[in-house]
Length: 188
Image (cartoon, rainbow, N blue to C red; front, side):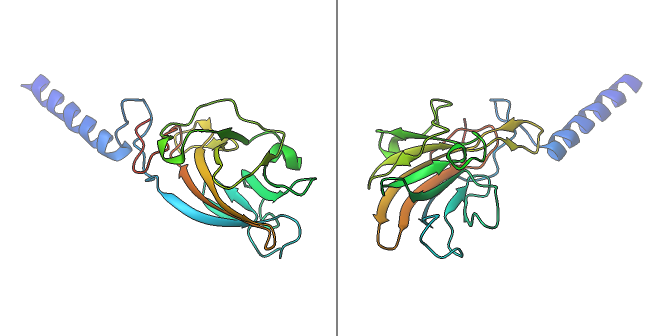
């Protein structure tokens, strides 16, 4: 009888621990909490625009940011040395080679899983309307202790050279360890 009570108590403690700490998916990662969604955003060039306008993007917050207020971003928008619109990963801005970009020919909607390579870390990526780009963030420390990169996909909707603005749609997977780039909760 005493053994049976201990077994029941152990089972109850296990159930409480699972409820307290959350279950993990079969991939060994904690259950994702951020729902992937496509967002439409605009960035203004680093040079030649009002400093109060956002010219960079951070994946960990899935937000446009001003480079004068933070160094915590993954890429910035500007015009390159020959006047072409381009995205600049951190390595091109002398902020370390931590984030990367990859031009792909796959349709935006067809990309459901981010690859782990090959990303470009040290060169700007020239842009054209309709172009699809994969983004790997700078390393991010997750709540469960691992340091990993976050992933995103973006599609260039328009570049306005007069206003020095980039309009794009972007889907960011903010769930640490996940690479899923489809709308909804990621499974991978």
